[in-house]
Image 1: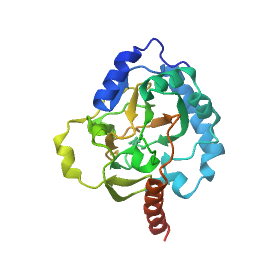
Image 2 (image 1 turned 90 degrees about the horizontal axis):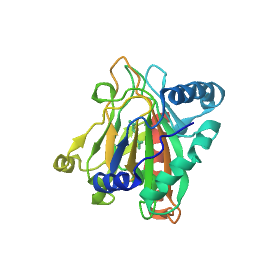
Image 3 (image 1 turned 90 degrees about the vertical axis):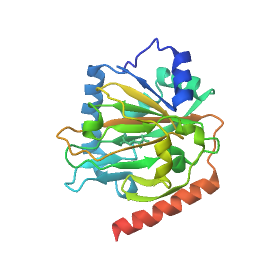
Image 4 (image 1 turned 120 degrees about the vertical axis):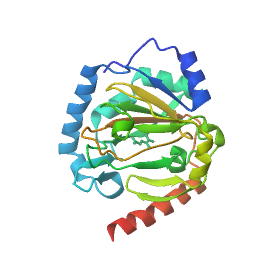
Length: 250
Ligand SMILES: O=C(O)CCC(=O)C(=O)O
């Protein structure tokens, strides 16, 4: 797996700090994307099929919409420790990174479900919110097929209040949607292998996918070495989640 090298880290950080996210075009080659996609098929047939409850979500026509537990996916564990990803994370986090898991947002054609707008740190509950996500596009992704969108600079607002969304795999949403009208909404147009790195406080989400093309995004996440779980925030999120998972399984 060869992630793009020779990235100007100084300007990457400037953009990340300024907007709360930054796009890297052709971060992976087409061959590497195909390699990941094939490996994903094996992971799904060998492991992911056995996942349950909050670890996996299906669309109404029984396709995988998202996977939230990837610890048995060997390739992802390897990617997470890639020197280049670690180096970029260190620069953006301003300290050595700690791995913080990975997820798959498969959003299949026709029935892929939305992710209501949220800040990742409401879920992650990190005390200093110093965390980031590499969102790697495995398909084309745009407004046409439920592409991920951002409200620019909202990472500067700190942690906002959230409320239950009842959306499987994206259980929380920003409480006061109106406030987002003050910020510029941006939906990157991505090709397979392009990547976005986003801050754990940037408000983002995606619409459902009613197009005939899937929109798969693989996320690899890091937090700063000194970051810790905030027990109160974590308790708040977990109790919200428990109620929603319970109501889903009734
Ligand atoms: O891929 C999506 O549509 C949502 C992804 C997301 O919310 C995330 O990476 O934090």
